[in-house]
Amino acid sequence: MSKMKKDLEFTGNWFLDAGILGFINLMEEFYGWNLDELKKRIRKEYNNVYYGYFPFAYIFKNLKHPNKNLFEMKIKEESKRLEKELKELGKGSENEKSPNTEKIFNRVWEIICKLCKDIGVINDEKDRLPLYLSACKNFLFFNSSMKNEEQRKSFYSAISFDTKSREILKKIDKTINKLLPSEKEFPNIYYTPISTEQFKSRLDKLFVYLLCFIYAFEKYEHGPKKNRDIKNVMFYSNDLKFCYTVNKRLKSCKEKSSSNQYNILRKTWEQIIDLLVEHKSIWSIENMYIISYKKLDDQEQMFVEFEYISIPKLQASIILDDNIREALNHEIQFRNEKSNVKKFCWLLEEFIKGKPLYPIILNYVNLFLNKRDKIILNKDHIKSFIYSLIVEANILDFKASRRRNLFSEDFFNYNYSSLVENIKNDIRGTSFVTSLINKISEDPEKREIIARDLLRALYMRDKNKFLYILLKNMNENKELSTNKNINDWIFNKIIKNNLSFEMYCLILIINLL
Amino acid sequence: MEKSKSSEPRYYWQKVVGEERLKIDLEKLRNIVKDVFKSESDNYKQKLVYNLLETVKNNDQKTFFYTLLRAINKPEKKFIELCKVLKEYYDVMPEETFINFGYSVIIGIMSTYEGIKSEKEGEENE
Image (cartoon, rainbow over all chains, first blue to last red; front, side, top):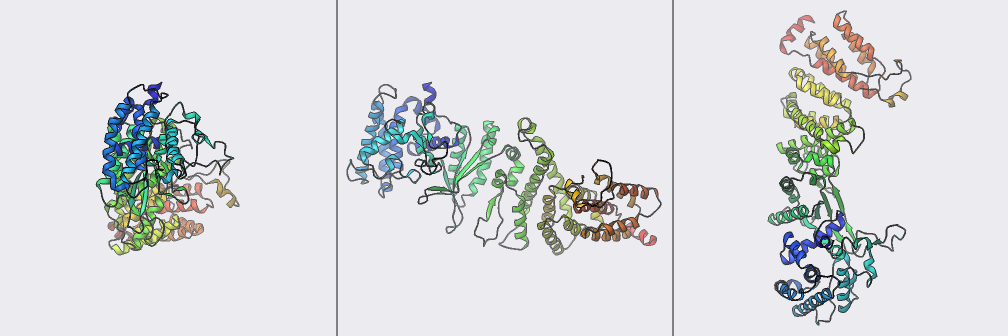
């Protein structure tokens, strides 16, 4: 049993797992240990890692002092010397209850205080350490009223999960993470405060992980300096190794590319899928989550725009197909540049969230026709739009044709393969046929006028008007009218279709331009 | 295509077909229209299509059927077939249904154009 406790594994709860990932990231940042190395060390010198290496890294990560940056090198050197010190102390039994852990911790605390004095962060070794983390401002040793001695004791209690000496460790609430409710605000909610008793047997270093929650996220910035769009993102999956590898790859990808970092999220999807295929774990894509937040507001004491996006199985099965995924992997502008709200959106992200792509594309085409903001419509765009619209139309039809059961045969056994097949066939058929619509007129200006009229009709969701304009213009061109392909297509997809005709209409319009 | 239940309150009289709901098979309708109009002249068909388009756009069921029936008022076998089908489907339809019905007929006619050759023949016929 004790061996199980000591291995580093995900719990299946994203909140705790984010903490575990943050812990791994922190240790890697400070000591350069990758996941395997860390696991090895935990197995061999469990106490050293948690009572020695961890406090050292954590404290220096959260010191708030102007001198800190100047002495980075010195801190790094000291961390190497730490190893020797801990080796000596680490001799003895691995039993948690033995006073060894306190000895290790106290020794490391001495080293930390001495180093802080050396680099001028504090004046005397007995002074309070200026620790600050906006995510848990007043938690235990972060509290500005605590003196050095108190800080040491409280940090030790937190790591050793000693609920007897510290009442606050009996629960998890807003003090340790701004996402949770606070007991004072919500005394009437049944599960506040969240008791930590249940975790004792399973996760005995709970507070270590909770303290590292914020280090699981990676910052991505996008846009000009004035209107910077910042996002802190974490990709989460149930498997520790997979999650760690994905986030690490993303980080290295981000570091390589200098400008327009938000595009990283686009490019890295390819990497993620490649990884999945390597690991032969198709199931993982269904269990991938993107957790992101904009920033942690200090004054309001809360996370701004915290999002938890999961990939539903339907969407996951569809984006497993390379072509579809690549086509959806586009960022497009769908609002006027003068507008204050978000102008760009990433089609794949919206698709994963389950939001309709049709209005986005409709707006884009409208912007293009009004010749605003240098919008272009090239082959890539057309391809991407056709794919998105067809996917959406087919999903609508699929949902309507089945009884409304989420956990159907398709879900469990077939991975929605019939739906994907339909989509692919539809794409093949539609791309060819709709390109024929260009023959409606030789004059590109006339085509544009027709497109405008059609778009107006579509905005008003007026199928009657749309068909009227379309067929009236087609009627002038006998060859086009007789063409069996396009004739059948219009009949099947627009006239007969009551659910998803709008998407097919939009495809026609796009092909006119 | 089924007539939706929501259309029932909009009727003030309804075709009595027992307890069954009226179903319109658009595919069948279009195919029959195709067969029927194959031998007509293109010019004639073009004009007919224009007229029919106007009536459907205005949701003018009266004129639509008037124009259509005038065009198929010939004692030939195929026309009789078409009339039978129309009789089966004729009813005062809600707009949504009528749109689909009308355009199916129109697109059926449009698919039978033969191109430049028949234009000359058509002129003679007219």
